[in-house]
Length: 392
Image (cartoon, rainbow, N blue to C red; front, side, top):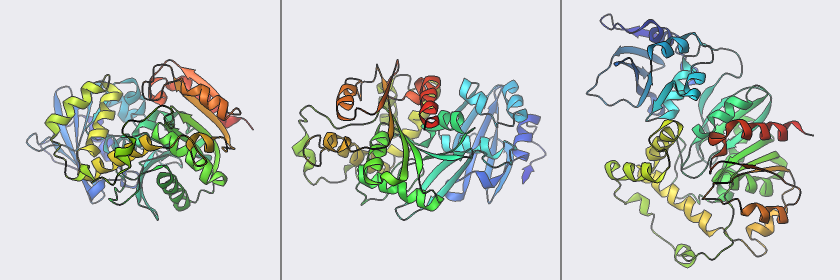
């Protein structure tokens, strides 16, 4: 449904997009949103509420939930491209800031696509929490699990790369993105693994291929160990693994600690510049949008509490002993691919030799990248994943 105020002279391409709005494929937290579209120095707001979209001149005095910026030619290309602008977004012609969930959701909702397997966003109520997902494609299911501080949006290139042959589902783990953030949750690998199987139950998936990056890779390993019957193949991209060297803060972090994230003052004007300085390229392209996603959660008390607890559990992951990570890793039975970044400072490639010794059946790929291979080296990463999924 479209309502266009007569005094607004929006470009035809933008009007075409909003005319195609389909509320069934976008999940709008809270039920309403203001999405700002900028083109050639002009701006228009799309107000989404009650399943409809209304286009009007931008109310600059009102903050937009999401900002999409492109040149007029790019907007015309997006309006005529049935793939809904994702090509323009991937090559950098369309910039999405503040909220990738809403921005990419808007592209999905205005793509004009109606066939099965179109890109869509959903909230799925499970036994553990309400979980936010994006999905596309048909075929054997693939579940993608993001890293610490990330969201499902970090797997947009993976969804695009694999959806021609698979039903690809990327989720926000509980505590992150648009998913619930329960205060009392453990936020450790078993909790997250059980949250993924709870989502699979609701989606009717008996089993699936699993792709995990960083924390998501650690969750994928836990899925393979705790729920081996639910995991077909594993692709682990710079997975978080248990430290082998001394952890000086181990004893302190094992003590019952208050959930500091709930009471910690975290003004955006202080936090944002720090994060963008720490993250290389934090003010440009994909990385800038990823930082937006991190800040959107971290600047909320529940998001901070989940982040700190998940980080603490990664740090405390016990390496040795009967229940230690490296002891248990040898019991992983499914076909497994590890992708390592030669410039990864968070999970150094030196861990590869320990995995080779512990899990000799696994495959390994080394790439010239850092900690997020699917964003930094998407062609090589997805070629390796395709090869894994195609083999018997």
